[in-house]
Length: 380
Picture: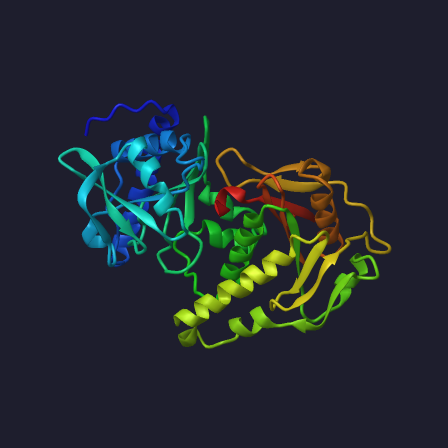
């Protein structure tokens, strides 16, 4: 295929992306998996990224494109919407069609014949390990694929923002005391069920980041009230009895979880709970997803020392852990969350910043300190 790219990052990252997908597809084939997507070769990846990047900088009737492209033939898409005439893959085509396909879950289908890439239609169903390119905002592209075990947050491969390229480092799961949520986001082969608690925590994180107001979610053990020692009294928005809307859904039988009404109900409850994190202060839930309070102010527990260092890392190549003062991770919201986990070591804190950054705080018994994992690269 002959295609002259002008976005240098596309040319740099394309061979790496092909190698990653080739590795995953080979492993999936060897393990007997079916419904696998075609391999996106480097020249295809480069061309799709280039056309999409330049489209992301354009506007149609004052709006920037927010689109998702998937590389697959129409016959591999479930109930595809087929255009009568193929559309050429170029920035102009993508910009014009973007207003009609910007809703979540809709992909523009891209395929290649006789060396030419074209848009064949749209689909809401794609095969396993299908190359997907999302436009989150102007000049911000995310390369991802659908998890092989169905529902859940798509697994991110790389993030491109202008001339910055971040390749996700799957080996991050080898770090000491890696949080289960981070392992689920990085592990490309781990089962991810609809009502798996870790998967729901990921959905909460995505929803928290999505409202754009910033927020803190504290996850505390269900069998203790020790977390109250780190909350300033009185709690402005305490919940009594605890609200169990999300918790009850997760206790339902897995067969029932496959039904569409359950999936819709789960999304509604996730949005409800995540929305409360936009209120000033922290939202507190149990590890069984019962809502305990929101708008809570975090304070240092009596008899505990101020936190003066933590281990900070990002699951990308070059994002190895470094020890720093918690104030360097973010503002007051981050500092208070780090102090909470320092005092309540069986708790987890999720912090969304208004600038889009998202950080998980947990206690590492092996390092004997709080660890902060910046994961917004995985949530886009």
